[in-house]
Amino acid sequence: MSPSPALPKVTLVLGGARSGKSRFAEGLIAGHPGRPVYLATAQAGDAEMAERIRRHRARRGAGWTTLEEPLELPRVLASATRDNGAVLVDCLTLWLSNLMAAGRSVESETQALVESLPSLSVPVVFVSNEVGLGIVPDNALARAFRDHAGLLHQAIAVASDRVYFIAAGLPLLLKKEDQ
Image (cartoon, rainbow, N blue to C red):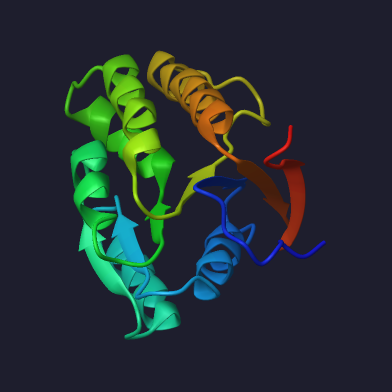
């Protein structure tokens, strides 16, 4: 199934690690007019993560404006949607990790993000890792992360016009505008 050409206001792209979700999300934005913005939540805390970031940048090429923001997603998203093309936020689960590591209230930050969405002036595509399909983690921190991620995904999905799930590089449309 290929996505429809018109990009709605808010899209959520979920999938597992290496499922093709970022590449799919980039493809959604590629057809939208204006210079695309890549709002990255990752931090290069080690050499492996720095290499992942480098590969993502190389794949996107010079046609994208890249912004990096590990914590203040609603504020930076609001400014990124002024006078630009569509915005890709990659990824919500890294943002969640950053919030938890900083001791921030995930519930308050999620609410602030959801409340910011109606005022955005260009389409936004969120990418996030679906982590709740596996076994129950054996430690409290991992269980808290999984639970927060599930609730974050539900909140963004409700606020989204379209939701996709990506598996093995193949998109499954879970929600479209008229649902």
